[in-house]
Structures are given as structure tokens and as C-alpha cells.
Length: 111
Image 1 (cartoon, rainbow, N blue to C red):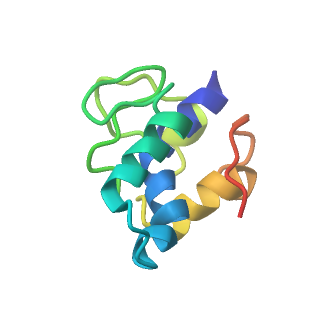
Image 2 (cartoon, rainbow, N blue to C red):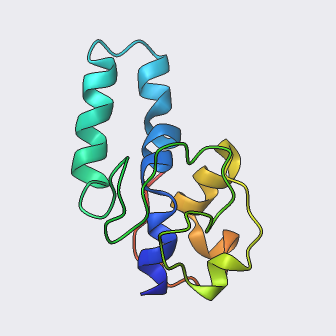
């Protein structure tokens, strides 16, 4: 459960951070490709505007971790005192145990 919660805080942001270089490089599909990546890799647990298994992800960049009031986060994430930025989102998706030890997150984005 705790792993799902941590993954929930990161879904869309991870897609943006991990796949941002693709868009910056001028990939012709741009936003359409980003939407497809989000739906394929994140959409099972996340939505932009409503909580699912994970919290909604709209405006996650710059938001304090565990701050969506309608979602029940794990204690480990509640006490992490993280504000999501590019560096922390990248680390949280690629090496979540380095960012929040004992988070039990099974999802990892390869570098």
C-alpha cells in the first residue's frame, strides 16, 4: 500500500520529467505522445483531475508531497517534507528508495 501511495505522488510528474527530453528534442508527436505515455505508464493508477489508486496529479510540480486532502497517503510520505521539483521527481521515479527510504514503491522508470 505504501508503495502505491508514493507512486501516486509521482505518476504524471515522472512522465514529464523522464520523457521531457523527448519533447524538448522536437519529437513530432509532442503533446499527443506525452498523453499516450501518461495513459500507458501512469493512467492505471493516476488521473489528472480525480483520485484513483493514487492521487490526482494536476499541478503536482511545485506541490508539497502528500498534500492532496482527499487522498490517504502513507505516513512515510507525509513525513518526507518534499516539494516536487524536477530533481526530486526524477529521483523519486528512478531511485525512490534514495528519496524516501522504506517506501515500498515497486514502480521504477529506467534512466
